[in-house]
Length: 432
Ligand SMILES: [Fe+2]
Image 1 (spheres, rainbow, N blue to C red):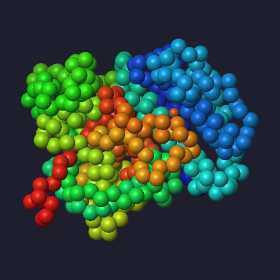
Image 2: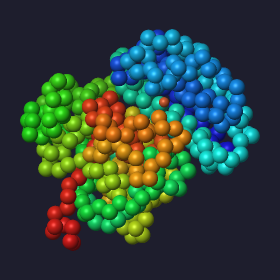
Image 3: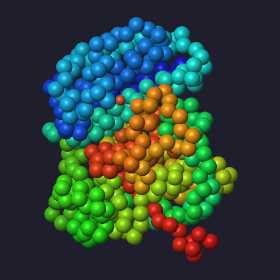
Image 4: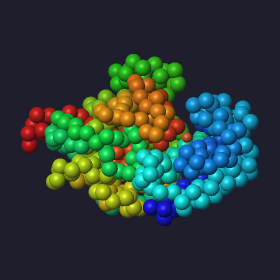
């Protein structure tokens, strides 16, 4: 346990360092979009949360810097205001993170896992690892919004060995949603509970750029028929006409990726679309977005045993062959690129590549208990947020499981968000 925690903490920190060392101090202090924090805020916030939960709560040690708690409290400081705060300078923030981490290594040597629910199975450490990795994904999204020359580099993802597409029928059988047993699962993934779904059909792959271009070419953005009233009003107000970071390029499109312009690739999952755009595409295609339960059943249910597994491919942690995770590549992989990650029913790329919007609003599972604090997820429950599932190319494997739940406002698209479609099964399909 200690070895695993040490390795995961180090892996998260090397990613944080990479994301904050490739730009200069002025860039770290700058706000690249009102939707995002200056990178230096995320940096010190990561250290502050580690101090609050591990140094002070788990370790019972003296505070390192209690004078900065308020500055780095995400609830007290809206993102748009963060550049005006008296933030720690980059060198000061790095030194602070180092001091906190030294104390964490020290207390990790002495901690007994199992004394308290907070440290059972190393939970608090797992929570902090996931927190840092989630901010790393947020910082990656900030990099995507930054102007100026490219500073991040990565090899392209693998090519698909064979084309994939079409739909998959998921038969009507109850399945187990959520988890009681995954030790680092967060409160909103618990408890495990039975969900009975009628038969449905889900796309074998995320919706691709090529499919999405057909929606644009067919006038999808100018026909209110496909949009919800709120979605149409948002489309008009924001003058949406294509995914974020796209521009017309001759008779096709180009997108800007981390400072480089490239032609849009037709077989890549579409990314940087908001929930409203996903919903409009689905109605245009004669389909709908999957519910969250439909997404999870497609990702975890094994028809041979009736069991829900941790991932589409089984219970084992993701490897490079299973999914496009962890910023190894700076883009979603073409559909079909991860045959080893396919679900038993034949659904591809549920994990990694792009977060997938679902039709479901964010709520607790039946029997939900907030842990270790209400602000982790309970305060976000309600109709304002839609659930996204599966993680993106920018999500680390420690913060991604078949049960992992993300949520955001339906207008957001600076995140690495895409989607796939679903529909009810027809009677002739469901009785096959
Ligand atoms: Fe945070």
